[in-house]
Image (cartoon, rainbow, N blue to C red):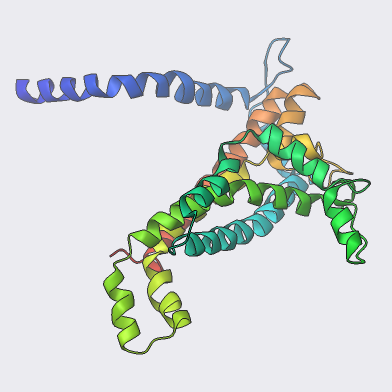
Length: 292
């Protein structure tokens, strides 16, 4: 490399330093440390003991680990359609001219910036089977409300409802921006040709909204795999382990059972799954995402 090339590389490095230094200190080095820890048995107090890939082998064969992954996938299966359809409905509604539209957008986005502790405690109170507002309202119409977060069959739906409610505003904003980027001329031309509102939505709006949809799905899936706060606050992984997700398992392995090596190995298994799903999505976007 000649002097000019070195000078260019040095200039680029100087501009990257403000981002590269924190990335290295707070992301890359901890990741390397986690990978090293996953190859050891460690209780956070005594010295590490090398076990190689034993932690990974044990986790892969552990029914509890498989159950945690299945619970995480079941959460995503319920959460993703709910948050996307709800966010899309709000985006379409608030993209139309109406009084107080800006206020409504702010109101729906407010839960996004609210602490998960506050949101989870609020939903735990709302879904309280003994004195919660939801069961009280259901009782008014003659419906006996379920046990919600105290019932193994309803605990995960309770968490899904709370999570979707909190994230609706984020999905709404992203899809609303996508809707506003669609040229009005396409809709007008379809109206001239006699296309109904449903046909315009299906054949014009949804295809041109696909880049925003793709972004929402990728981000929501990554967040879904990392679900933890609401689970820890609302159910603690119960009842009977019905809501024990992967990150909860990592937390318990580290702080309840003193198995930081196994917890690190499980975090890398989760990372590998999220990476694989993301790569599949990125490669598959060519088949259904329309740009321009």
